[in-house]
Amino acid sequence: MRHALSLTAAQAAARIRAGELDPAELWRGYRDRAAADDCNAFTWVAADGEPPQLDTAAPLAGVPIAVKDLFCTEGVPSQAGSRILAGYRPPYTATSVARLTGAGAPLLAKTNQDEFAMGSSTENSAYGPTLNPWDRTRVPGGSSGGSAAAVAAGSAPWAIGTDTGGSIRQPAALCGVVGLKPTYGAISRYGMIAFASSLDQCGPFTRDVTDAALLLGAMVGRDACDSTSVGLPAPVEQPSRTDLRGVRLGVPEELTGEGIEPGVLASFEATLDLARELGATVESCRLPHAPHALSAYYLIAPAEASSNLARYDGVRYGFRADGVGDLLGMYTRTREQGFGAEVKRRIMLGTYALSSGYYDAYYGRAQKVRTRISEDFKAAWERFDFIATPTAPGVAFELGAKTADPLAMYLNDFCTVPMSLAGIPGISIPCGLSEGLPVGFQLAGPAFSENALLDAAYALEQALGFDSAPWRRA
Amino acid sequence: MLSREQVLHVARLARLELSEEEQQRMSEELSKVLDYIEKIAELGDLADVEPTSHVVAVENALRADVPRPSLPAEVALQSAPDSDMGGFRVPSPGPAPA
Image (cartoon, rainbow over all chains, first blue to last red; front, side, top):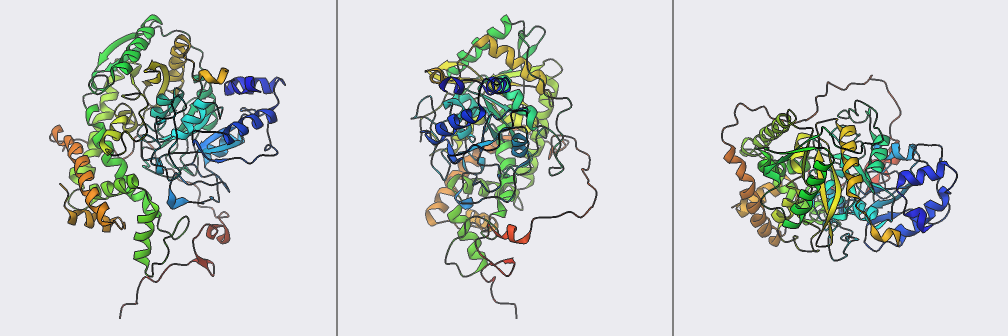
């Protein structure tokens, strides 16, 4: 069974289909590992006992999936890392999750996260921090840190998370796994507990690029329950490219200079050399507005969050503060006790940015900067197929290292936020180690370029030969 | 620097109660974040730039207006902290205006 648990999801699915692997045994193997997890990666694990209905004829062949707590799953706790949703069991399931279970991937576990996806370390969870399997004194990144840690530790074959400003790509980088943020609108947001609706997007965490393509393909598509969902123009293909001949990579000066740890930069540059060896041309480029992306993001995302989180009022679901005799007092006390510090900070920031007298200077201006950032990328696509950057400015940091300084924490998203604002896809693949910890390489492409992006990432992955979890083979 | 009064005003708008200690901390932390954010002022005049509120061009996504079953009331009420007579029960909003 140990050997079966070291397979990628696609490999396991192929063995199941060939009749060489019993999916019920695979289920039990992962369930037991998830139940024994010592990284606090999970907020809920499926009960011991009979496995669910496993459809081996379906595309995902019964290979189980871990799902970020942010997704509504019918009858299963969905708390978004927040005390204000303690014990909440939704009456319906998110479209993305329903598509996965419909494609034959049963729900194995729910994964820990920063509260309402606000954070870059998974320390802002009401259910305790998640630890990085590479070094348990360090953070796994965030906000989808539980999903990243679960895949890195091998306690789930694959997982899904959400990315608003880097919440898939950055934890994937810090945990040495593959993480993909698709084009905005590729996957339905229905049933994803909302943070910033114009930015939130669901995507896969996997052991390799092939698994990412498989998982993406099972989730994409238009959904009548999300009017902003558009799907992808062509079916997701299995990546197969082994060279990068003719591929033009742009390396933005603004995202590869100051603020990036030397070890991360060294690993990034070595990967660019490898891309050249595979036939790619690599040239420096400019994204002049990228240095302002973080500012625009920290106005737009909190503004949308302040509106989305108005629904938590102690009336319809979740937590309600006791002993308050009047309605307004019940609202304010419930929110005081139910939300954590970072969520309150973002609600305050967003409310301020939207308030009378400040709207034009903050929120309105941020939306214009967002346009400028999209234009920068559009100009880049005239010369390049993809943009390459380090995924995160540093490797996994120690628990508590940045909790006292919100701005230091926000700077983790420096290289991922520009793509989020432009709505374009980005993938992080592990490209090496610095100080013994994984480094992520980010490739971003034009909107709806997922097939080409996965193909390029696959070619690099094959050449890199990074072992995404050495201990899985032990 | 955000004053204590500004913090309290925004907290009222956001329906958040803040302890004394939180008010102080919020004033310091938000000021620091706003100082960073205000770097976007360096970009100068953006009067001619269209704001982006949505990145993917989507036409109106309409569906046929056909009645269909919705969540039964008892299911919708299942997660409520307090419910009665088929509705959500809340504390009194205060005395009716005279």
